[in-house]
Image (cartoon, rainbow, N blue to C red; front, side):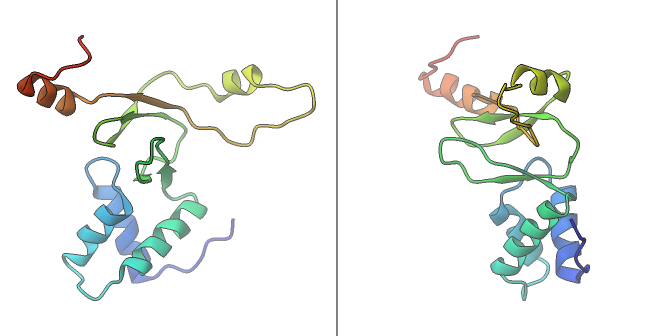
Length: 141
């Protein structure tokens, strides 16, 4: 993919993802940038997030269950966990060997895997603590 020119807005967008504690949504990134640069538009931030993903400078995690996409400054292959209660996304440090997945999904008709994503779903610590406090805990340790 051909890298597009760098603009101040694109650098601000990249910097916001790079320094965000976790995996920000597009709105999170916009809030970080617009708090310092009032003139930046949401459309500009969204467009720059898409461009940075296309260029491979950041990753996009698309959770299931209707949660909005999150962005990741880590671009090497790694797994994620998504809380099905709050939608937060977390990195999961597991042994990650893309060759295992490629061999496991090898198909006789010549299908070639060009990418894949490993996402675990569950309930994060904060949501479990809230359930315990409210006495509504559905999943026990």
